[in-house]
Structure formats: C-alpha cells, structure tokens
Image 1 (cartoon, rainbow, N blue to C red):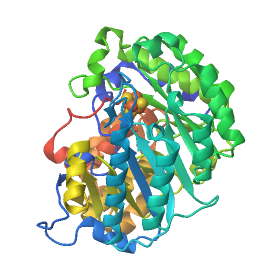
Image 2 (cartoon, rainbow, N blue to C red; image 1 turned 135 degrees about the vertical axis):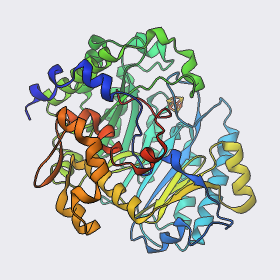
Image 3 (cartoon, helix red, strand yellow; image 1 turned 60 degrees about the horizontal axis):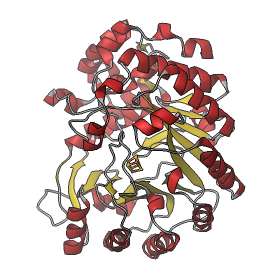
Image 4 (cartoon, rainbow, N blue to C red; image 1 turned 180 degrees about the vertical axis):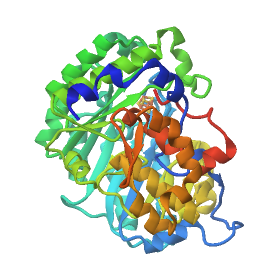
Length: 466
Ligand code: SF4
C-alpha cells in the first residue's frame, strides 16, 4: 500500500472510531494479564506449574524490572517508585539476585539469548550496581555474548551519562531504547519530563559510536497540550536523529487507575479526533521518510533487522513489544515481572514491599498466573499471527484444530462480521487478512478471538484503542 493511502484520513471515519476506539486488551499475552488467577510456588494448585516447563526451553529470555525513578512523569502508568534515595536500589538488587537463584532449582540450562532491563528507570542504577546485577545473573544463567544475542535496556535520557553507555556496552548490551515521548517544551512541561533534543542527539550519537546496534525511541501521542503541528515538529527532529526503531504509543488517560495522571488536567487532553489526526500525521511523516510500519505501533528503518524480519514473516511479540528473537521461555525478575513458558504465565507480587517480603520468605514472589489449555495455546498463536503478520492462514488453523476454520471459530467469525463490513478484515480461501484500515484496530480484531473476554463480558479495565 502506498504511503499516501496508508495515512489517508479517509481510512478512519468518526463512525469507525465510535464503534472500535473503546477499551481493549493490548495482547502482550493471551490471556491478558488481568485474567491471571492466584498461583503460588508453595504448591496447592493441581498438576505441574507452568515454570516446570522451563526445563524444556531451548532458549531463554530474561527480564529484570528496576522500579526506581528520580522524578515523576505525570503520564506514567508503570510500576515504579519515585525516590531521590539510592540505598533502596542496592537492597532491591540483592532481592532480585536471590530470586534469580531460586530459578537455579528449576534446572534452567537454556542459553540466555535475550536480556531486557525495564522499569521504572534501569539507568537509575549506578555503574557498579549494574555490573553487580549482570555478573550475579551470569552466575545463575548461561548468559550468551556476541552479535546473536539481544541485550537491551530502557534508558531515561535525563539520567543516562556517557560513562553509563560505556558500562552498558562493556556488560554486553547492544540495544538501547530511550523514552522520548515528545520534544515540544510545553508538552514536556505539562508531563514533567524536560529533556532537550540536543541531549538526546548526543546520547544517540554516543551510543552509535560505542557500537550499540539498535537505538529505539519511544514516542507518545495524545499527551496534554499536544497538537498535530507540535507532534509533526517532534517527528521532524526525530527524523534528523534517525533512530533505528520508533515505537509510537497512544496515551491512555486513566486518572482513576493511575494516580500520577491526576496531575494532568483532563481539559488538556486532545479529543479523539485530534489523536487520530496525530497518529495519521506521524505515520505519514515516518513512512514518508522511509520507515517501515510494523504491526500496530512500531516503525523501523529499512536497513534495521526488524523491518527485514517483518518482511520475511519472522516478527514476534512479547511483553516488551515486537521482537526478532522470541525465546522459548521468559523469566521475569523483580516486582510485578511476568514470566512465561510453553505451559503458561506467572507474575510476581506487584509492590516492591510485598515482592521483597515474598522473596525473603521463600525465594520467589510468584502470586498469580495462568496455565494454558490447548484452546488457549491456539488462540495465543492466532493472536500473535494477527499482531505480527496481519493475517491468519486457514490451513494453519485447520492443521492445529483438525476442524474447518469456519467450524472451530464459528462464533468468532460472527463477531468479526461487522469488521468485515467496515473493511477492517477480509476472509478469503487463504484465510483472514487485516487491511491497512484494520491495522489501527488490530486489538479489536484480536479481541474477537479472546474466549476469556467474551466469557466474562469485561471491557472497562483496558486502555482505549485510540
Ligand atoms: S515514565 Fe519512566 S521515568 Fe517517568 S515516572 Fe514512569 S517509569 Fe519513571
């Protein structure tokens, strides 16, 4: 599809927004995490727990949640602790490493090909503690090194010093993701996150010079005080910096759920029609500059591995968004971290206090999770296909179910019919295809296949699609 068509306002009408822009899961997991039920490693649940399948994993991904931040960004919906004191970070690291050692008893021998530090602000940690963390993880897990591994860190450019970049590279990190959100000074003030573009450019160039292979910027549209013009100006600056990847997220204003967002006046939030115009304008600018539009909210330069993977149908999705290297299993360490194996998901205690007490007591902080049924696995795979490849082939479904597509998914296809009528998806002899118009509503298309969502009828706890 041509860029002009892709970003045409004609693709999105007020009627479509009315019908589909409401709350919907993001499907970083299936079932979505709000479906998880109480689960403990002390026993009590029937059958083998999902972490027992870690033994069969051939490759492993690690995620470490570092929840500390120096100041509060008003749009934030992350699990974080805002503090000026550093000593809590040092004791938190001890707990993370203790939790890591608990997994040694799960006989995890698979090589770690992916490591991600998220938060909060992982670069809150000083160089010595970052090193202590990686060396400590290396004592438990077989961390791999080299070009075939993906070690990434979410960095706040306001707290990222050049010596930290040196340290990260020395420890094997090769990917850097920076939270930019918006470069407009008024918007930055409105969300309490002041970061001049010159600083970000210097860090981007510094990271490139040190050999970081992929530099990613996170942007947000729909922030207080943002307009189409201000977002276009931000995108123009971003294009001058030429990051390898860009994630463009929609700001979900949910002040009832996220206390920080109560510091934002609802009057400053752009109305839905303006947000659509922003999304379209940003897409037009980015694709016009040669970036490939991937999935529902990612862009990659044509020479980036992610653009190539998407073209070859190798894109995958995990809790950190789109990825090239999905591992068989993920171990999430730290407060609220989620893990998965082929048998299901498990999540740690959410609050730092509860997490620390749980690990102190029994070595792990598992509090809830989900064991996948065969039907869950099928839908998990199908939703991944939709999110990453924008299609599902009926032959692939039928070989998994042994039943005709229309038969197994009779109710789901009935649910999809309005989306077919609206030109969001099409069904032919090959399978189900998401159109360019439907790309904006991928979450809705996926939701048609969410058996848990339709069983309970819940829809109010999720962020809006647009
Ligand atoms: S947006 Fe990032 S840096 Fe800001 S408060 Fe949230 S987690 Fe911390």
